Structures are given as C-alpha cells and as structure tokens.
Image 1 (cartoon, rainbow, N blue to C red):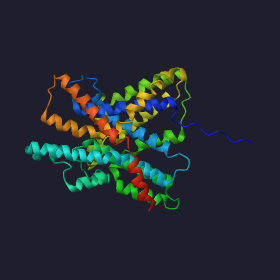
Image 2 (tube, rainbow, N blue to C red; image 1 turned 30 degrees about the vertical axis):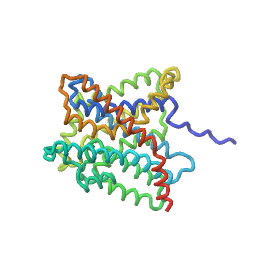
Image 3 (spheres, one colour; image 1 turned 90 degrees about the horizontal axis):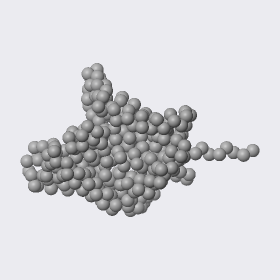
Image 4 (cartoon, rainbow, N blue to C red; image 1 turned 60 degrees about the vertical axis):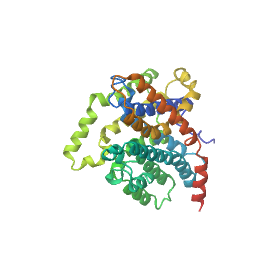
Length: 365
C-alpha cells in the first residue's frame, strides 16, 4: 500500500511571482501616498490613495509567507526565531537610526519643529525602547518610532509572528498559556487585526482550491482588486468606523485598528484573489513566470522601502516642499527616495547573515 502524495504547497511558481509583484506594488503605493497624500499630483486614481489597503495586502502576504516557511522540515523554535529576528532587526535597527539621524538634523536646522509633531514624536528614550520591543500600540500605548509613522504596522506583525510561533513550537501542555500571555502583552488593538494576518496562514495551511470554471477565476482576479480599491472612494469603511466610535465607548483608543471590521473584509478579498490566481491554467500564468527575475529583485527590497522611505520624505518635504501643480519634483522625489531605499536595503535587508549569527549564539545559550 503506497502512502498518499503530499499536498502541493499553496505557493506555486507562478503564484510566487504574482505575490512578489503584489508586494512591490503595495510598497510603492505606501511610498507614493506619503509623497502625495491627497492625490493632487497623480489624479483620482493615484496609487497613493490605497496606502491603507496596501497594508492589508502586506498582512495577508505576511501570514502566508511566514506559515509556509514554518513548514520546512527540521525547523524548530530556534530556527523560526532566528529567521524572524534576523529578518526584522536587519531593517529595524537601521530604520530607527535613520529616523533619529534625519529627525535630529531637521530639529537642528529648524528648531521651530520642536513645537510640531513632526519633530517631537519618537524623540525620547521611552518611545525608542518601545519601538525596539514593538510595544508602540500595545494596550493603546500610542507611541511613534523616531520620524517613522509607518512603523506601526510592523509592531502588529511582530506580535503575530510571536503568537504564531508559540502556536507551532511551544510545548503542548503550555501552549495555550504562552499564547494567552503573548496576546495579553500585545493588547486588543493588535489582536483586532490578527484575523487578517491569519487569512494568510489559512491559505498556507488549508491550501484552499477554487473549484469554479477558469473563466470565473480569471474574472475574480481583477474583480477582487477592484473591490479592494473601491473601499476608500465608497467610504463604507469610514462609515463603519464612525458607527463603532459612536456605539463603543473608548473605541477610538484602538487607533490603527478602528477599521478592523472592514479590514477583515478587505483581507478576505485579497485571500480570494490569491486563490483565484492560483487556480488559473498555465496558459494564463506563463507570462507571469517570465517576470520571475525582475519581480524577485523588486520584492527583495520592499521591507526596506516600507521602513526607510518616511524619514527621507518627511525631511525633504519640510525643507523643500513641492506645490500641488509641480509634478516633476514629485516624480523626482519618488524616484530618488526609491533609489535611496533600495541602496540602503542592499546593505541591510539583503545582508542578514550577521544578525542570524548573533541571534543564533544568543539563543544557543
């Protein structure tokens, strides 16, 4: 009697390229959104209008990739922890230093910034410490990383890594206890968006199949992206958030999680998009696989783009502001910031070996 063949991983070669393209597009949307937050330079369909939706895409992608990597044979909790710590801190430490350096330089050049949130948030030891420990949004503790507002989502993701790692590797008789402790430390704001991240985990572990006809899957791929993009213009996410603000006392304290209800819907749409694309026949996805090299190269720096861009943009927009009708300076700022993040990422995100060695030695003790 032969044993059944192992189930195929959810991430196929074509889907891997597609995920890389989605990751880079999401990072670019966040960057453009901070250069042109009101869409005046790029028009009604500016990618920057979808920065919030891009973060939801990141959450689903993160859960999918982390859950898939945790299935490697022979991995234990040390291998999981070393991989996550090296990946995160290889970018986090340079990002915090960059924020401190540019923020400090901005305050030195323009002392008036001391009376502006741009110059005061994150410039104290408490906020730096909580940023290093990813506690900025635990129990409504509203702190900011130095000169780096987008850092908030990483504080969410790291606690998802911890809770998922405990679910996979903690001893069975203590697993629930450790997960409960981690959840309590993370706090309600972070836990409210965890279902979005867990959708990615579900994709990796359950490997859902799309059983409909190919034409329907082909239609769902653009349709789900359109539905995600429609959330902002239609305003239903804001309407639900305001309703929750009015009927739940103190709900505003969860800050970035105030749209959790509609964010879960967005996460489900993103997950459905990935399922639909995975089911497409090879004749529809062959062109995607031909983009493997450039897609991988672009996606390799998305973490750096996400965490390095905001200090650079904030600094130069304060000292060299561009007007609404000046499109060329905005294009130059976008290209220059992107190039800087990629260059810095080459020396940080792309070289985590030293961090792995350090954390391996630390955990071996």
